[in-house]
Every structure is written in structure tokens, then in C-alpha cells.
Length: 607
Image 1 (cartoon, rainbow, N blue to C red):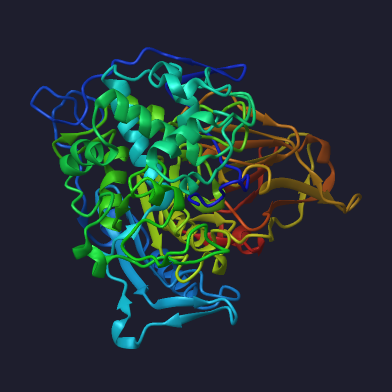
Image 2: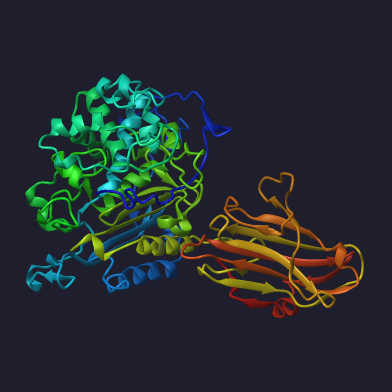
């Protein structure tokens, strides 16, 4: 079964650009689509659609500094990933992995760890893996190829958006208009958009592979009734992308594997990305599961070099929801292409407007389940601190993931063989989250003033406080000013400005107003004295009125409380200044004042 949460209801999350949210509905502005998958000529649009004709960035290896990343967090990314080769907690999360991280056009980290092939079988009686002899085990390598499982959905989605550009597929058209047999059993009103955003009403999964032929599998899909009205709920389902595959094959007259090769992998030079890899690739492919009942739907023994997903196997290895094999570098090229608006070098596979739609939340009616066209958005459960309303990605059941953050122009590929030797050995997405947290931390944040700022840290399930010394406010014109930068998991992680004094030692929230530094727009009030979520990753000016503290000896503090197990990038506070009329009673740029700050969990950071 592909997808990390097939049938499990894991929440997925949000964005908005090129789309107007109107009471939960979406109004799509006209988009000047043009032919895709063409070589960029002198008059073609550049990477950002500027019409400059300049080639889009291509990837190169380089140092963290060249990528604009900090080396320390990248080193910790590898160390943490290696820790999951050990019991986590009872068994290794994966036998091995390939990690790739970068920013801009630079790949700053490309590291294999562990084994691509370690086990020959799984012993159910002892819950242990039966290892190959040491000389038959294969170490992970940079170019190891993985069964991507549900990350394959991204390729199918890109192929669909290409057809939307060309006018042969319409986003809001009913699927039955392309495939009349699809419209049975109550599916007559399901649209192409609902397939791409998992709002069709399909069940999460059905065992199509039990049917004796491909024709019977398709007939079973035609006969499948929605479990809820189309457009009524978000439910992640492999059946959506299988249906989309059949639409694409019908309107193009080409099989999905041919479309993949001709429209994506050949133009981009993804030479190790394809369905049904040949036997000659097997020594370079990471093994997956010892597939036997009852934990698998099929008895196949060790799966190595063939698709793992049962339904994709039933389709001969070529399916819209699973079946693509690839390596980390190829996925990084795909990610770089999308971050550059659909172009890589002089090749363009999508228009910038199309990429924007793929990264646009169409599921505003379903908070927590933000989804673009094929891409999941704003999902801390595997994107970790890289998650923003503009962060897009996907995971695969075999242990794979791709995360793209347009805000920082960074990309992360984590490819693990986490069902080797058996799927029950792993749960959750802890290695993906850890890697994403470290890459997010590797992107520096420049101080609002000077060379350093107070940083809250990124510890989950903790409380950090930054407390100013006692200050006497003699007038009724007391105020706090500072610069504030925050990016937290919404609602779960909260920053609160609090005050206490000699007369009332209880810490109480202090209302304040923030103004985005670049925009200079009217201030945003925070009557509860708190912020949470995404601030745009820009500095904000903060003002808090302390007039009600006149004549008191007051203490002020920032309290940052995080939940578990996910966090955002954290909070920075800079240029802390408390004024009492015309008098400055505290300024953290003065060494004596800064030395009196009590920091518990906070630290001075230059990045």
C-alpha cells in the first residue's frame, strides 16, 4: 500500500497565489498557458517568466557557504540520520539512506549511509531480519536507486499539468467527460482537480491487485462508489492518481511510462528515473520488503528491483500512484526545476504559472490538509521546520521524501529503504523531520540590527524564557520596542510577551502591535500578547504600551512554549528597548543591560 498514511487520516497543510479564496471557494484567474517540455529559445521565458531568455539554474556540488547554508546543522543532519540506523526505538528505521540537501543551485550535502541491501528475509517468529552474508550485502551509494512509492504521484501530477497547459485537459472538467465508464457508481461529478487534491470522495485504498487482469482492475475502479460526496472531504487516496493515469493515457494515446520518459526524464536528463527498471540496474537498487502474508497482500519474498506497492505491481509496475524508481540527484534536479518556475538550464517542462498552481492550496475548506495540484503543502509531520505555507513536497511508503521550500530556495531529499526487511519495523517520520529541522536551521537569519539577536532555539516540547531585569517606570508613557521574527508550528508553538511587578508577581500577557518591516503596512494588533505560525520569514517592528505599569517596578519576558514532536524555525528578538517617556531605561545594545538579561533556553545567535 503506497502513501505513508493510506487510510490513516494524517493531516496535510496550506498556501495561496494565483488563486482567490472566496468563502472557501476558489476563483481561478485566467492563466496564459503555453506549450511545455520545450527547449528555451532566445525569445522564451526565463526561469521566472521574465522573457529574458537566460538559462535557469542547474545543480552543482559546492560547500555549505557557497549554498548560503551553515555547516554545523548539516553535519548534525547526517549524525541524526545515522542514529536511525540503530534501534529507533526497537528496530532501525531504515537499513540505509541517501541524504541530499541544497539551496539555490548548490548541492551542499549528498551523503549515503547504511546498506542498500542487508536482509534476505524477515523472521516473523523472532521479529528479526535474516541478513545476507557480509560479502553479499551492498552499501548505500550516492547513486543508489529507490522505489519512490507515492513520490511517484508528483510525476503523474506534473504530466497532468502539462496537458492542462496544452488545453487537452481541463482542471474543473468532469473526469467522466474523458472516461465515460468512470462516471458510474456516483462518480459522474468528480473533477480532475478533485483527483489532484484528494477531494474526490474515493476510499483511501482498495485491493485492485486481487483482480486477475488489468482490465478487471480497471473495471473494479469504475465500479467503486465514493465513500463521501465529491468535494466534501479530504481523503488521501491512491485511487485518485490511478484514475488520473487512465485519463492521461486516454487523451495522449501514450502509456504513462512513455509519457514520463518523453515529457520529463529525457528533457531533464534524469537518466536514473523510470518505471520498471531493467535487471541490469538491480545491483544499484535499494531492496525493499520480504513481502509475505499476513503483513503484505502478496507472497513475493524479497522485493528487490521490482515495484513494492501491491496495486502498482498488479498494473505491471506502471501506475499513477506508485512505481517510479529514481535516485537522489535526479529528484534534486526535479526540485530545482520546480523552484525555478519549471525550467532547468535551457529546458522548460512547465510554465511558471503552472508551478504556482501546483504550489497553491486548493483545499482551503479543509484546514490542516493543504494541497496543491499533486503536492502537499505546509506539513510539519515530515517537512519539520522547513514547513511554511509555500513549502511543497511528498512522501513515499518505502521511506522516501522530497521537500521544496520556495521561501528560502532550499530543497531536501531523504531516500531510505525503511520497509527493508519489513514494513512493521518503522513508524512515523522522525528521520524526515530531523533532517528537515536541520536544513531549516542551516538557513541563516540575519539580525534585525547589528550582528546578533536573541534566538529561542528549536527544542520540541519545551519552554524557553527571555527575561529583562526589573525596571522602574515613573511616567505613564512606558513602552517596549523591539524587532521580532517568528516561524512556529501554528497554534501548537506560541510566543507570549508577559509582565509582572512587585504588586502582582503573576506573569500576565501584554498586548502588542507588529508591523512588517519591508511593507511598512499598518500594524497588526495582538491583543492576547502572543504570536504563532508563519510571519513571512521577515522582521517585524513591535510596540507594546506599558502605560498601565506607571510607578511600578516591572519585569518583562518572552515565553516561547513548543509542543511535541514538531517545531518551526523558532523566534528571534532583537533591538530590545524599554522607554519611559523621554528616558531609555533598558537597551540591549548596551553591554551592561544585555548582561542583566536572564536567558533560559534562549541564546545570542549571529545566524
